Image 1 (tube, rainbow, N blue to C red):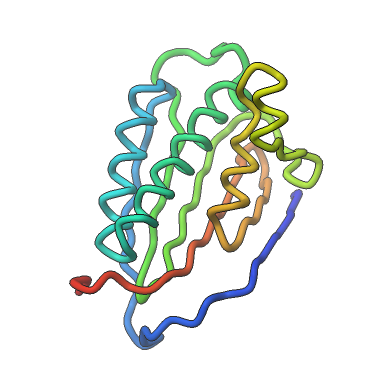
Image 2 (image 1 turned 30 degrees about the horizontal axis):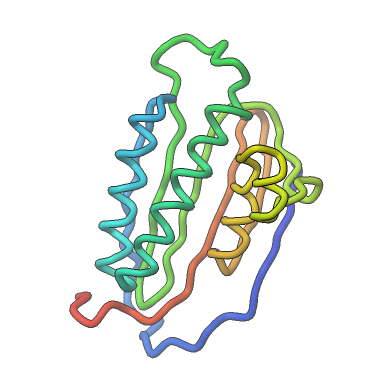
Length: 164
């Protein structure tokens, strides 16, 4: 099993650790349209638990990761229709965790060189997915167990004012 973990300094939040976490799991078809729908759903969930800006950021992160699963992880769409990946969203008290699982080839997060916006423009676009994920998320970890990839992303923030 391969594993990599990255962590930023955790911002202080005022939530209570005694509340159970809420969780939603989505099965996402390997299509760009399905990824867009999942990204919008995660944005809505994030805005219930965090704030609107963080919800927008997480929508972009989900779109980037989902598109990369299709483009890089599943290679030339050799998988028959109906193949999927899963996103599990768990959160409470200002902490939102996204877990992406797929059966694509192994991914070396440590070797993935994040591009910069300047490099992307020079190369004609693209290559910003890892850069965006690392900029937005507070924690990243990747594991491979058997044939499954598992990318775990964590975002800390102040709970939304009207979150219950």
